[in-house]
Amino acid sequence: MKNKISVRLASLLFFGALLVSACNQVYSQQPLSTPTLIPTGLFVSPFPSGQDPMKVVADLGTQTALAKTAESVGGTPGTPSTPTTPGTPGTIITPLTGPSLTATLGTPGIPVATTPAPITVVPGATTAVPLTIVVPSGIPATYTLQSGEYVYCIARRYNLDPDDILARNGLIDSQTIYPGLTLQMPQSGNPFPGARAWHAHPDTYTVDFSTETLNSIACYYGDVFPEAIAKANNLPLNAVLSVGQKLSIP
Image (cartoon, rainbow, N blue to C red; front, top):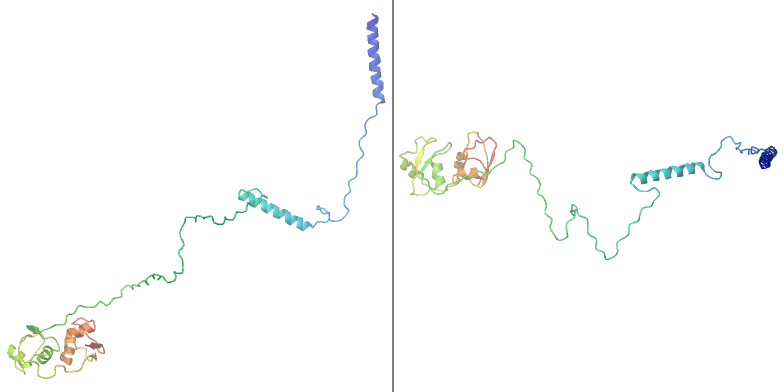
């Protein structure tokens, strides 16, 4: 019984001591506030004193642009690129494959082939083609007179006596001779009496009348074949001539 009373008294004394200690404890006070100094100038600069604000802004813009460029190419901003190591002397470098370059200047001493100039073809234009004209050789068995021709003309041309031609065909000198008449040509007999050339040639002949033909012009020169005049001027044998036209006479 006495032990229980002693325990209770001890407990009461312990709690009483705690209460007395709590009453004597001083409450913690709020720390004193430190006033913040604010510049009293009209314009307050956010940059440290002694630095140019515009230079700081420009440096920030440059750093931002470099960072964006590095990100766009997949690199790390601020990381310098690795310099290329120069080739070692004596090392064989294999050229890249690709289209070869053609040299503009030719090699000295080697002729350079030139491309021929293109030929321009004008629609509707005609190109003169040399005509195939055969100049007779020898005496034909028969001959048909053309416009502007007569017996003496044919005799000069083939170096025959005109009387032999008339006799062979039963003609007289005063008989009318007309174009389209076919003559039998003597293959032997006397040559033409006199000079065969009636007018000198080679020459340049100017057409005086529209009725003239290559055959009649050949008769003018005597011993010239109309085929030779046609060939020299690249004209057909039956060409229609115009007044003032000039012809080369061989």
